[in-house]
Image 1 (cartoon, one colour):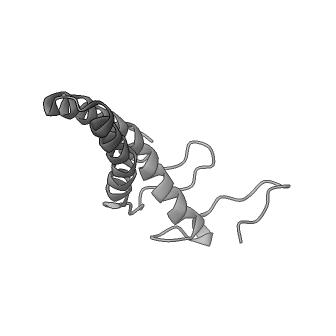
Image 2 (image 1 turned 180 degrees about the vertical axis):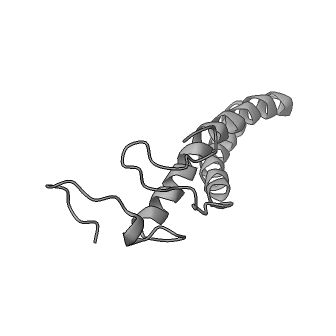
Length: 108
């Protein structure tokens, strides 16, 4: 990652070109899916067990959802770009891949 969500132009380790990646909305959808599946059961459990004021639940779980989303979003963007790289999708081709060192395994 170059910034919070921006991908570097090339890999700092192997110089593979990353400027043509196409992650689009995939990381956002995955983030919503994961955060929802983590927080909703916890929200239900907290409400049934302790019956707190709804504003307290909103404050606690609202902050929790935001923090978890901000943590997961750049990591999931990296996962989507890595998946595309591994499957030679959206401009990642054999010709653009760096030469592998001896002893490394072939991806196919």
